Length: 284
Image (cartoon, rainbow, N blue to C red; front, side, top):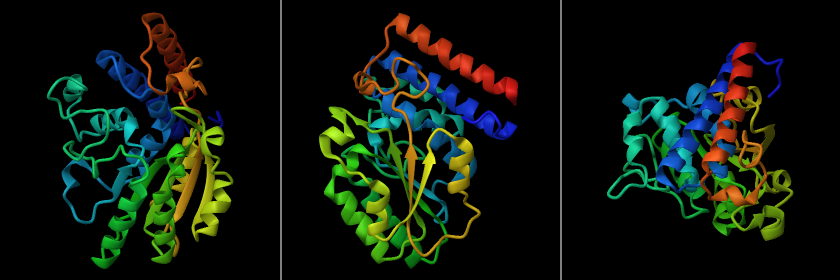
């Protein structure tokens, strides 16, 4: 991130880096998990839960709470460590991740406190968000609904049906954030099914569109600012990210979609992330 940002922003960025270590530890302990796609969205999740979402462990049943839906449900490891950080779940519960009989499985499920919707079958999260946003307006509640999508799932037609519906119903209380890392399990998004130009597509469906660096917490906090009044149209935030962000050998490397580091690889990852955290903390 830009080293000229505020100390508060650098501390937020450092915490996002620390959560990358926690995700790697979680996946190593389980011997399985979606690695790189979890690392790419941690700055987004950190900004959402630290600065944007109007929800807490004590308000998960409050009708007026903001809603967050992890449409790319396979990146649930990232969400788990964030929920643990903010007290929605005990950190010790994560020790059961992927163990027999656990509730902490490899995709998002509503059985976990703080998780609004079960996701993992890609392409459904935005449709859920549309329905929740319509319900909020019908009930005269001012909550907002945030949906984090992977750019690979934008190949699903259901995403664009939801986008059309959101515009038709003028859902200014709906925000779609695209983790635009340009990789999916079998190749690049361009190779598998090119959905660019994304900004033009969302605009043609009647959305406001903002493009940001998905690893710059200053930009993310600005575009997602909850204090700004909701507009008349849904908002699409195209967050340009790097799959495997923070670990040199994982970055933009398709092999790390679903892989566990060896002890040697783990040592490298830990050194790189710890070094970045120390640098950010020195500047703060």
